[in-house]
Image (cartoon, rainbow, N blue to C red; front, side, top):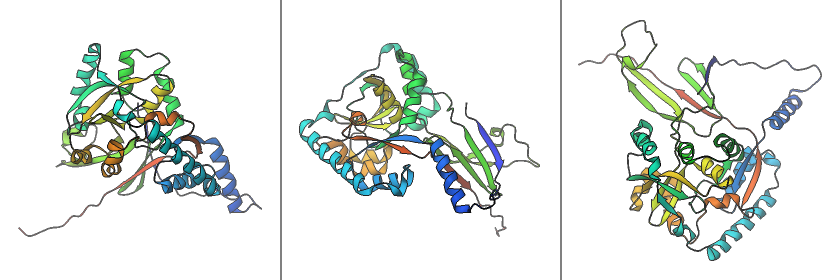
Length: 336
């Protein structure tokens, strides 16, 4: 169950130990903290843009700006050359992705999913269906995943899940267990922090007074504006374009299953019949490069995360996603 801690921000700098410069202390603390919070990220090398990879290593990698830039470019170039080889040896492989109907025994779970508000809000644009899809040949646009999170998901699902457990793992409706810290940093500013990469701002919402359970005001309430922060639906889902399937969400779950030797997974399939529809359901980068993903001879696939010639495991500093919400109130009289 999601936990939240609310606290006031405090500006506090501990006193320096006599005889030790502030800079040396800061560097020592940073090094010790990095050793304690080190994590690993799995990157797909060889995919453009190269600058994004270099930026990630310098900003989030343990080596940071001390990383050998020339060596990074050399290994990226080697992976890019390997991708060109795959274009010849695996031409059309993305057109051969396996997909089958969902087992009828799972129909009750699918019906419950379709009736849930999360499903209705998330999949309200294109025709959707449920099915079993082959993981290896799913097209991927995301270039990196957290190895730590993948490993934790493998532990969560267990070594031999049955069909129902696999469905619930890929299409979860439970609460997120990632703790959230909420700080009030000003009279009209709040900061939300969470380690989950799925943490995000949802939307502003106009609420009725009866929707604010437990809140007692000093006067009658006319309306409530809520600025909603939380998590994504986190359902394993793909976009179907012709013979190809692009993994739209659920990268860590898909990688966890693939690492366990599971070859097919239940998911939600959204069908796009023309390029203009992609902009409604995928990230802008994918929609703007649709030809690369859906027409190229050999686009990046999920199985590439397990190919030692392409993937690289990078030690990275622990990161926390932070969302700041602030609001403004204006009160004035206008003539009718």
